[in-house]
Length: 248
Image (cartoon, rainbow, N blue to C red; front, side, top):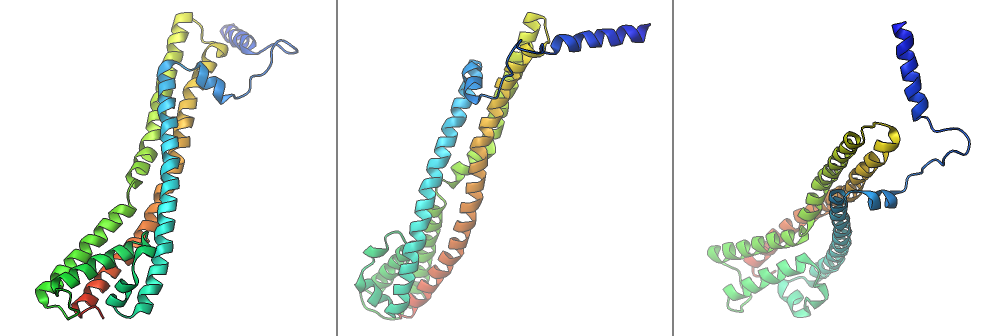
């Protein structure tokens, strides 16, 4: 008799939670815009912050793509001119204005200017202190160029690592709001709690939308900048060695 009573009670709950067949109501479909509009104020603020993060992420991605593309293109043209010039003085006389986006051109300019300053404008081999000074100057220039290439990448990493947790905060807040509504209404029916839980989960989805491109872009740019950094450091050492020999 006890089992029959339990089964009867569970059957009654399932029947109450099941929508009536026929034309009693239309099935709801996923509408992110409606979920965002109906969300509570704290959840809306969380999603607004995540949307701003997403917009900022794509702006940084676009800027970095153009920055690295220009650096690679101008550097390739500069290296061709550098190999064809023969000496540092010949390349300096040709001018570097056509290679403004190249980190190699700026390192070359620093090394050449320091070499000429050490020799007072005379193209002659450097002594040991002079050569050490030029090498230090080219290393500093290389470090600055690498830092310039890495600019704004930390922002992508920050967005990628924090956006999911910010979205999760909105989700937790929304779920707490759903449980408070259950307590106030004294009902745990799906029509009562399902909309609020859906509103809460949309915050996590928005957080992932902001985080995934940020992480992918950060990894991509880190790999590209790492490749350029190795070449830049090697080029700085080459310029220092050439300057030591008088710019040959």
